Length: 213
Image 1 (cartoon, rainbow, N blue to C red):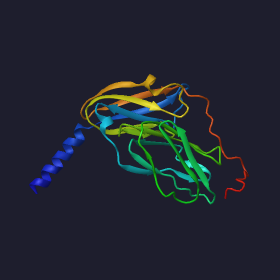
Image 2: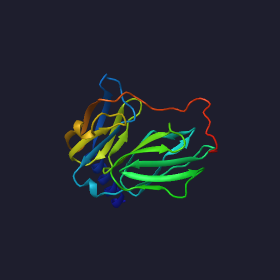
Image 3: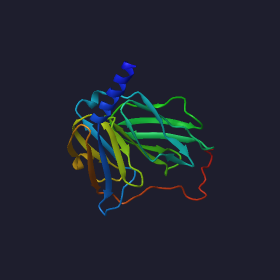
Image 4: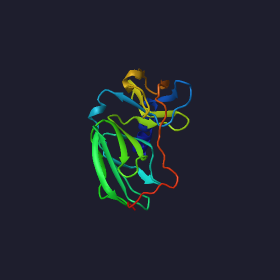
């Protein structure tokens, strides 16, 4: 019983010592921004490597989700839920790979071992585009329609908080905020992004995939 009590006390103390970032992302016109990757980096985090796996679906001839954030060392499966074949690839420096025409689940996941931003495409369906942010830090979140991200359970210390979005003009480093996060503290941050005009190609009604079924 005493050991259990000590564990409970330790857990409560750990929770109280953890801080968080409450982040809102808007564009230059004041509109809330979705699909923005918010991430916090601190000293020593680059040494940590995740051994995790996540999924990016192909459904109704679209990648789902549109933007995915993972830590370096994560493997991603690309199941094809359509009744036609897809050919997934990336030419991005952070991860070049190719999954030739297939249906169902590919034999192996793709291992993302280098930090950077990766653009995904389908060699058959040009409108199928998605993005993967491969990050050194375990502290990140992708904003939804509300333009909000909450990064929780960060140890006290100094952090650099950045935001990336597929339509962002310039590099995330130009908007970086350097924050000293105290134990148990919460910092509210606002990022205003200069975004390129939105262009997200969509499937044309009645489009035929020819012989690639």
